[in-house]
Image (cartoon, rainbow, N blue to C red; front, side, top):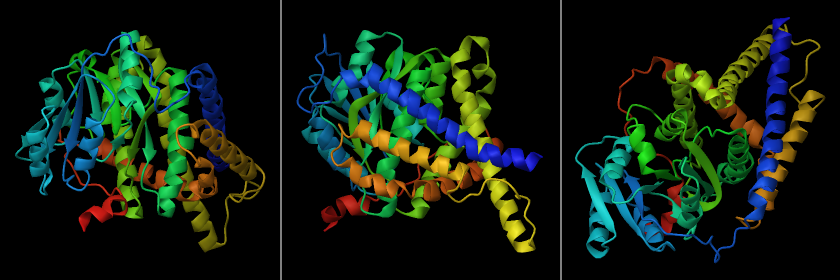
Length: 422
């Protein structure tokens, strides 16, 4: 019976993927990560130090851009410039950047007179850059002083590396949503990136901290301005052009994240829509035989969307059954932690434990957030399912060529920088 098959798929798909990410993540750790212990004052030795252009796209970032630029100026690297792009901010972002540039020869500022979106700002700054390696960071991050050294070594040693994505850590964590995201960035995002690196292709670089080879971006004509998530789009186009993307766990940066349900919903809706857009736009080149290594990541993304719709359908049928005293789920697994549900819960907790252990070298006392991760399936799976169901038709019917412009996100910023307002 179809409903039986759907219920078992809803249970066992996340279980199977949990095992896949666990095995591949541990493989990554023992194959690469374990050999390179992160030590704050001992970055890797480099045979040379090529120049790096740091690009900071900004839109209404007056509360945090000063802090971000200050962190960048304190990087432990001999040759770099900073290009900040003020994308028609309506607050004091532009004057703050101009004042900084007057006192800092390493900083250049580009002003847009109208909102053109992050992708446009990144592309213009990249074409204006002096150097061949581009580090793109969001205007709300605190970058580790040694991050450039950890990332640039991949480009020096491997000419086919087109991008290296860093390891973002959660800075705002004073609410339940913030605490859960601390564990999520380790057990879900970090573990999956490790696993994808082993499987050969990475779904997306981190828009908060990523370094590119300029010649690779030139080949794909920089960022597309009509994609909701420019970071997912550029990741796919680089890999479709046969460039390699690496994940550098030692390239740390601290990011601000949404700490309200509305802010989290809007962020995840954007992520889900961006993922759906690349699936719809690049399915034909992705399934060419020459790009065989893209197939696993494409199929996994496609099945994840199908899983979300499956769970949503089951929940709808369950609610209907409760209202009509008729249940189509007789003899099927219960959603409460018994049988398959208990097995899935156990594997989720194992994944949380392993990932927090892997990441404890980068951040002390991560274990204290294990308790909050118990709530992850309840809070985030429901959000993931809901945003996917809403986002896929938005991506399917979104007009190609429509510019994706900035919208100021909820970053919990008042919780981190609140003292600076007074």
